[in-house]
Image (cartoon, protein in one colour):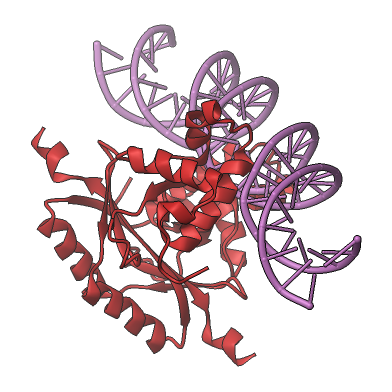
Length: 136
Length: 136
DNA sequence: GCAATCGTGTTATGAGATAACGTGACAAAC
DNA sequence: GTTTGTCACGTTATCTCATAACACGATTGC
């Protein structure tokens, strides 16, 4: 499997179905919600969803939101920079915004190295109200 | 209830018990693990733990780790600055380090305000291997 | 007294995630 | 061309995490 060339055509059937469900939604979905969406497509058990999700996350096509126990499709269509650093999650409308901020990433690396900590993965999730929902 | 003066003496019995269990542990505990620790003290149901945890988190005495679904006692004995910004979680030994970094906090605020996002709460959790475990 | 509030206890249930087992497809090795 | 390994898939059962719904008792303020 190549590094970065994960187009839809390379996905297995189940992975493509899960990816499709996530892509169509404009807010995060839980594994069980995805399962419900895919019952007509033959999905029967949570594990079918979780296995597909595991791969999609591994490919960088999907992100897991820890604070929601839910998943979103990566919003970088060009698919070049999958490394989303942070997420802004609106508690009103549920929409999620991906942020790729270099200085934030740098600061996290600094903090880790200062502590002699071998950083593997960072989770940054900001909760609040998006500008749209504040206006409304 | 005052702002910042949450000493052990102000806690209810259940809150104090849960706080004690967390304080004694040097790594995060799940609600159900806490429950098991407190069975001898009369705890019977998860809800007793969760209710105490809710309050302790509200008081700032306990932090919830989203990526672990677990809880840790705040490591600031003086209890003055409860606002832990970030956590470094060792995947080998399970220990958790609290970080209060001003520049990180500032950057998060900047990012939010730049997007017109009303920030309520930020979750920053770094996963990796702590210096101790790397040495071993 | 009486209402309001709050912590508490109990049972049942909902939601998230994985273990353990077996099957079939496919490609590399021999 | 059969054997071996790998990988996606399907199914059942089970485990962990979290909350809904209801009832009781103590405390406070009026």
